[in-house]
Length: 242
Image (cartoon, rainbow, N blue to C red; front, top):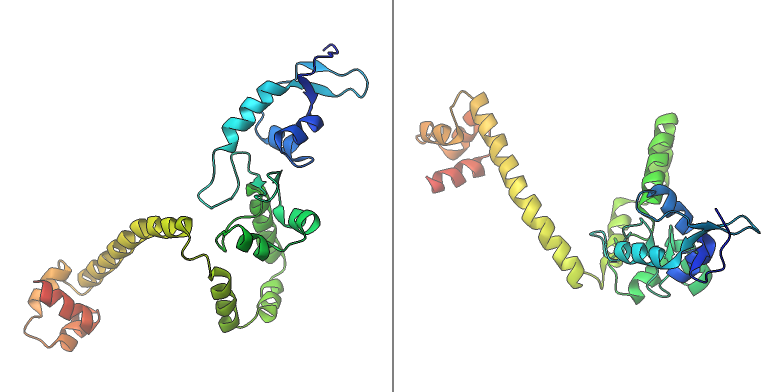
């Protein structure tokens, strides 16, 4: 490669500030997504820094910046998290918030009206931490017991969770996410329950739940439930349907 004085050619470290990346973040992103980013077009002789076309970098960053995860203000297409206070992107937002904005994660979420579950870490950072915890628990069987002994009671955890969610339950993004989850999970849960009832009826010697209900209609709800292997309320509900 040859040197170039074109002002549109920048080193990767220079591009980070121009594109809104935190120091070191663009390097990690380009290494993880080699096929997405443009290749260097020149080399700066002094310092041996590879130079990139700034407009090409801008085009790629612009295409990726608009793609968001389903979690509000979560990781973007680069796997980074954008700080809503200054617009810069980081692999982990917590240290930046404490250092640059003098606020905690809870204060940041409250200021920007984010849900309590909003991701403040890059996608790969969260995955690495999860893997590290899993490996640590596998290597040290007593670790789980120590973690449980240091964990507050369930009532305290529930109280903290309720406080964290307070003030964000009415956010449109939170409501939309919950509605979407309900549309997916509730039908699946109902179907799983029906499948379990059918399996129980077959185990009791009936072709189906409907057949079991019909065959035991002369019995009381409690007696029929005991024979089929389901609850009395289930028998009553099926009898009302038929």
